[in-house]
Structure formats: structure tokens, C-alpha cells
Image (tube, rainbow, N blue to C red; front, side, top):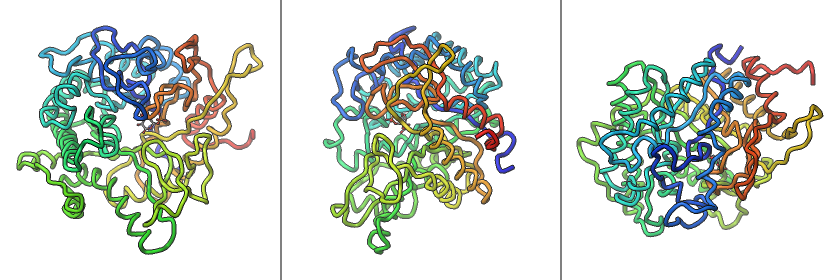
Length: 471
Ligand code: BG6
């Protein structure tokens, strides 16, 4: 039996992608409320009707129904994020917004009612817009203490009911999209390399500071980092391709290393020097960074390919991290590579390098889908490709566990349809549950179980050991 009996099966969402209710009960705006086209379009001066993030899938009003669906699938864990701007609407209030705190009290209690372990991301691509406007998000050091204060508030409130916490979602994305990852409103191409790395440094210090605070509040808490972990493959065995692969892999390792070793890796100095980066790292920062994490969580959607001379090859599609087209993998409707073995590879890689328990915090496939009658008077989606995607990835995760890697949980991305992070579409669906909402914001919001819903339910019931006798 490779999966431990208490293996945490479940799903993951983010507040700005599913809650909606963007201005209810005292919530302030976040950078997401002015990004109607995700990372692919301009920032607006305020909320606009074409921004689906304002609506989400209406989890704010339907959390009971949605958590009941998760319970029906047998979830052991539900990863969700807290919208910082529900708790501190501008990030700088003296007193937190009680209605915001109450909402997450209710969500946590609803999970616990079914025996579902909540796993909370403190900042999933979400920073109060007022802090983005005043301080350019984490570009300013000031934002570190404001984040720590917000984190202290929610840790103190929920620590007896929530054991697992993540600091920043996909922290390494800050270098690629400072707006998404760190709330930096200055356009990326106007930032120097020093400013981008300094922003990332502030987040790394904030992450370690919150880890310290969490331990002081409750030594039983388990704190993890979270990184977007597409392993990098060389296009050929040309040693120059191999070295390029190593350099790109360092971009990911850089962040995990700091979280696990409490300091920058040996190659950081050279990496900074090559880009003319000069960082302000105080002695106090260095002491704070020593508060390392208990576990590593990561998202895995696909691997990516690189070469010393990338101009010789075709590129593959991807969200924020794109690579070259891999001739050996299949591709999703969106042109993203599908590489189940890459999950086994990255699990080994991370465990071998950083020696921490691992949690697969996101994995899934986005597709355009339509409802069809289910023959029982309702509707469904025949999403066999989604079943195949999760089945093949879970199979390689199982192999990694059999090979000795310590993996303690797996949350599928978007167990229910929600708004996309990169492009802010609703029609890119990841869910086991279909939500009747369309690209123009219309729809009944009714929830429908897809074919994959029943498959995942059965898989969890068998603790990852699929029954094959009925297929
Ligand atoms: C991850 C993010 O990068 O990818 C999620 O943590 C995001 O927030 C997911 O939704 C899938 O990306 P997208 O853009 O297809 O929603």
C-alpha cells in the first residue's frame, strides 16, 4: 500500500478565483480586481464589469454547497486562500475586519464538520490594492511588516483549527510577473533586475518571518513554502543545452533553497552579478531567513524544455513559464505539454535536494467544456481526458512514493470550475464540478458533477488504489 493511510487527498482553490463578492462585507480591493485580463492585459483604474474575478464562482455565498461536494468526493484536505483584503481592506487598518474573519471561521468550521483538514495559503496572488498603489506591493520593505501583521491575525484566530499553512503561492513567479506575485504595479519592463530580485527578497523575508510567528503562536503548526515547479529538460544532450537547463532549474531552486536552508544558495552571487543585481540584505534579514519551513509544496502542470540556442526550435504554449515544444509529450487543448513522468521526476528532485516532506499543491488540466444530459434528468461533462490526466499523474506520484519519496498530500487544482489566474477566463475549466457561468458573467451558477467527480471519489475511497474490475 504505497499511499500512507492518512494521505491528504483533496483539491485547491484561491480566494480571488472562486469567492466573488469582491466588495461585500467590508472587503477591500486587491490587484486582481484591476486585472480583467489576468497577466495578459493592462491594469484598469478600478473594478470593471468585464472582470470575472469580481464574481468568481460565487463561493462566498455557496461555500456550504461546495464543501459538501468536496465531502461527497471524500476530500481529506481542502486548500484555499484567505483574501488579505477581506481581513485588512487597505492593509493598514489598526483593527481587522470582523466580517472577513467570520467568513473564514465559517469555511473552516464547515470543512471540519466533514473531517476535512483545511490548508490555508496566506497570499495566493493577492495583495490589498491600496498597498500596491502606496508601496508598489512587496517592492517596498514596508509591506513585509504589514503582511506579518495580517498573518499574525489569522494565525492567532485559526491555529487551533488549521494545522497546515503556506505563505506565498508560487513565490518564484514574482520574478516573472511582479504584479501577479508581489502586487508591483510598476510594469515589469520598467523594473531593473535589482528591483525584481529585491522584491523577491522582501517576500522571502516575509515568508520566514511569518514562519517564525506561526511557531511562536503554536509549535504544532506545519508551515510550507509553495513554488511553481516545472522541471526543466534539455532539448538535446549537447552539454551547452545541459548547462542552460541547470541555469533555469536554479531559478526555481533559489527560492526553495532559501526556505529550506535559511540562506541563499552558493550560485546566487554569480546569478546576481551576471544581471547586475545589487541587493539590500540586512543582518536582521539574514537572521529571519533562518526560520525554515516544515515542508515543500509545489504546483505541477508540466515540464518544460530549453536549449542553449532556443531560436532553433518551436515553442510550446504555457501559462507563465513557457518552454520549447517537446516532441515526446502529448498536448492539452491549450497546447500545454502533458508529462506525467515529470511529476515523478520533480518529486525525486525536490526530495533529493531539499530533504523535506512534499505536498503536491496543484495539478490539473484546463479545458473548454459543455454540459450534456446525464440520462437521469440532470447534466454532466464527459471529461475522460481529465480522468486520464489525474490518473497518469497520480500513478507516477505513487511510483515516487514506492521509490522512497515522502509525499503526504495531493490537491487537484480547481476541483470546481473557477476563474483562470493567467487569463481571467471562466471557460478554461479544471473542475470535477462544472459551474454554470459563462464568459460574459451570465449563468445560473448551478453546480453539476462531471464524470471525473465520480472517478476521483472512488480513487480517494480506495486511497489511491484504483479498482479496475469494472472497466
Ligand atoms: C497556478 C496558480 O499557477 O496555475 C493558480 O497557482 C492557477 O492560481 C493555476 O489558476 C492554473 O492557471 P490558469 O491560468 O490556467 O488558471
